[in-house]
Length: 285
Image (cartoon, rainbow, N blue to C red; front, top):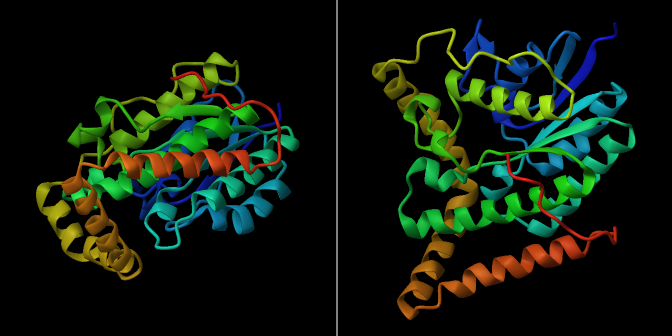
């Protein structure tokens, strides 16, 4: 029986950050690959920390297609929202091309909508709201394109797991082992509905003890500080301008205009894509 060829594309979430095993990262994709059922699976994880949609399209996708995968996961977009160059039109066009190329080869595509980083970091409202608006735009695009291309789509931007501290690693942006297991388990349930997986799926219970408070604080004081510094250099000046705009609109009672502006941009981005089929959101999982 030929193994299922599973290729994982994306950023640090799929790379496995937050789920350390044996001096490296494991993550939800590896947990899922090990529990697809009776048919063995071979995982090639091409995800790289910091990757944006451009990196997936230009670098990861060609390598994935060369492997002729049966199953491809594409979880990306959060890093796009953390850059001053964020453009929902470009994000939509890149994701459409990635999904189309994978399905054209006959692969099943896994996608997910993701929580916004501002809320996960607990940023003040005026700073968090612009990031949340960007992530909602990305999620809307992912919803629509997932339905168009017949992807297996996971709604991971909502639910009790977001506020369960036990699910998250020290940086509050990446799942810990328990969170990665939750993602793997939920993807397994979706694949089982379509007959692409069987069995009970990955265990929800961690194999390793959670980091201690001292370990979490040590991470935040070292690697965590570097993570914030790298992103602030690129995003912070623009984020401060966005926050000032947010406060002006709030003072005038016109905050709804910012949401409407984003909604129009998403609609235009989707309308600009070539296919003429109607848009629809996939059924919630």
